[in-house]
Image 1 (cartoon, rainbow, N blue to C red):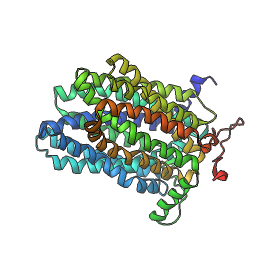
Image 2 (image 1 turned 120 degrees about the horizontal axis):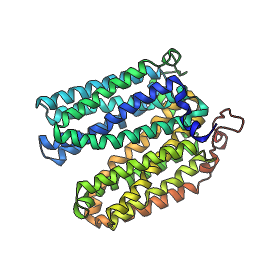
Image 3 (image 1 turned 90 degrees about the vertical axis):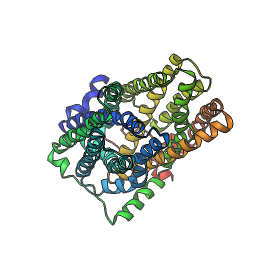
Image 4 (image 1 turned 90 degrees about the horizontal axis):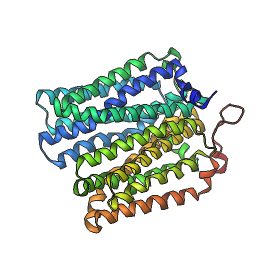
Length: 422
């Protein structure tokens, strides 16, 4: 089979094909809402503090509930969990759209509804990682994860333009309403998954607290996995989060404002699309080491923002940063799916997500005071140096090199090679 045919081979499975189209529609809607909500809040109060509160309200429930979501995803039918989560998010975004369209929205209402939508995501995402393995099969896991990344990047690029047009022409409420409807599309495709998948329930014993503890223990006994989680958390805390706060400030002060930052964001999405194609066709023998090395492609973006460089140079750096993000995430997700027992996949994913998410608000909160104290350019330059150091130290750790591609030449998947090396 050619590499291109292998890349698209998961779509031959009817169940995965249905899941793929549902998630493509949902990804388009997800990319509409952040911009729409930002302008909705600014139109209501004009307060950046209120905007920060609303944005944080989407993240807090994911941080608070993701471990519970992983335990639920390893205990009940993952398809059922995801259907319920999509329904909850449809209701939350649908009510939000109605409030915005009727002019009755208030900030406290938006905060409560975003908390509900974030809770839905906390349950949906861990279950989805486990479901993909059932739909695509072990041999096609990396290709399946790459196709989903490609669809998300493509949907994001299309939605960035559509969101701006919708907000400008008809108001943010319509963009949020479209997002709400995409959750119904996702739920419809999930509902039509094969009966065997719909009835599938992972083997899990004990109560939910014991299940959460079991998931944490499963991660702890795999050095490669908790090292990987630590790497993600440190990069998010010390590199990505400060850049997301200080990047728009640099664009506003030195690069011409929002159009420049939008152009960098679109280039980031283009890089993500390229990363999907790369990860679909590249099977490194040591996926963790390859992923951490790829993380170094993040370095040029904060380094060039520190100068600041011209927009076209920053766009090129944005392509590299977007490419590494998708390759990194695909290799990490596939490694978990292949090297962690199936009954622990959702919980291992939830721990990984928690490590990434919990660091982000702290990094965002510290970026402004650090820039005030030391200067924006100095902080961005420091994040570039930190990105190199964190990845170099991670690559020096032996467990990073022990985890291998779990598909042997004979074609049958093998499980975690590192357990005996704890």
